Image (cartoon, rainbow, N blue to C red; front, side, top):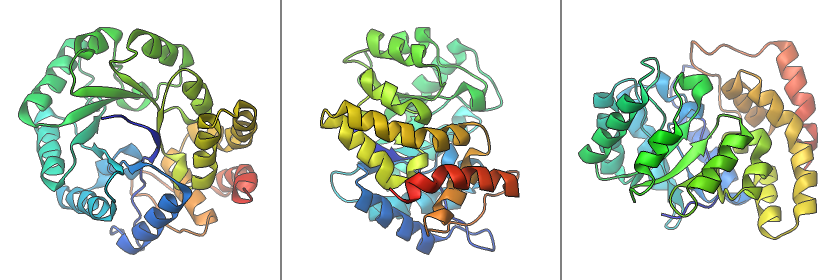
Length: 292
């Protein structure tokens, strides 16, 4: 499958009682579609999958699948701490209708690269899905090495890697080594334009939840060949995205949705609320985006 355009790493709205708020979810998805996203990525880290029950994860996947139109890309986050659980979550996603999954290394266990290769091979052997690798060592405590990518580079079911290390040189190396074999997917939002320059044709993006038109316009400007316009847009986006990358990422995304007039509730514990100072800083950075 060819990955292209801006695909939201979807937040999961919660109501005042902490339940999944599907009315707020639908409003958000409608807003994102109107802005021009190309697909949907539910149950990733931005979606707080780690706080959800299996039933909630199923309901979220089903809701997004039912909302999606033909031609819109669907990628399910199916991560979990253990291989057995990842297989269960991946089989669940496949049953609902997701043919592609996004998988970071299992968190907490910090597998070796040999263990991680075996993990991905076991999942692929158990469930007939395509795989987008997810490199986010700051959260998962494990890297996805070039040896691992070499191992899977000619496997047609390993279609891409969402690169969220924040290290541009690594993204360039991936683009150079695996052109035509593993698709580079932008996952470091404050250097998204740099990823585009180095061949990333898709962007699995958390900030698009709260700055949808701006992110999609940036992607469209670059694709149209107007690099100067894309640079000016990236300058406008950079401050807010850089603040997001500084910590409390999901809380700030959800606060940004509130600023856009799309309240989606608070995060689940252990993620705590933003301080007044954190809100003020992010609100100031969001002003030019709110006035986009």
